[in-house]
Length: 196
Image (tube, rainbow, N blue to C red; front, side, top):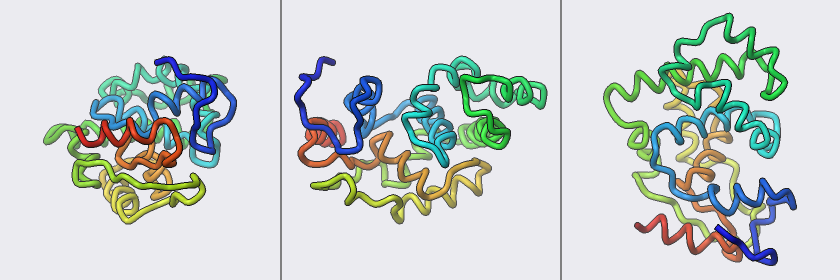
C-alpha cells in the first residue's frame, strides 16, 4: 500500500514511519483471523502503562519468542521459559506480563474448544463494527459499555491484562470500533470494510 506523504492521519500518529504504516494498514481494519486476534490481545496487554509504539517496535521479538503466538506452544511454556524471557532485552521484562501471555494462551485454548476466537471476541459488538465520527481523536472515549463487558468476560475466562481501557484500545485496533477521525484518509476505507 503506497500512501502519499501529505495525507491526513489521526492526530495521535507520530512521524515514525513504522507507526504510520501500522495506522494506515492495521489500526481500525476489521480483523477476523483467530491467531491475529489472540496475538493483538496479548500485545495490547503488554502495553499496560506504556505507549503502543514501544510495543510495536518490539512486536517481531514477541512473535519470535512466543512461537508466532501459537497458543498450543505458548500454553506449554513453564517457569524455565519465564526465567529465560526475563533476560530478553527485546521484550518488556515484566514477570506478570510474560506469565499473562501464557495464561491467555490457556484461556484461548479453553474457549476455542467450543467456538472460534473470532466469534467469541466479536460477540461484544454484535459481530459488526461500531462506526464513530470524531472530528478530533481526543474526543474518542477510553472505554465503552462494550469494553467493560469484554473486560469482565475475558477476566472471568482467565485472561490477564484485559482491563476495560486495554479492551477498548484492542477494539479500536482490530476494527470492532472505527475511531479514525472523519478527516483521516483511513476513515472511509475502514467504513467500507466494516460494511462488507
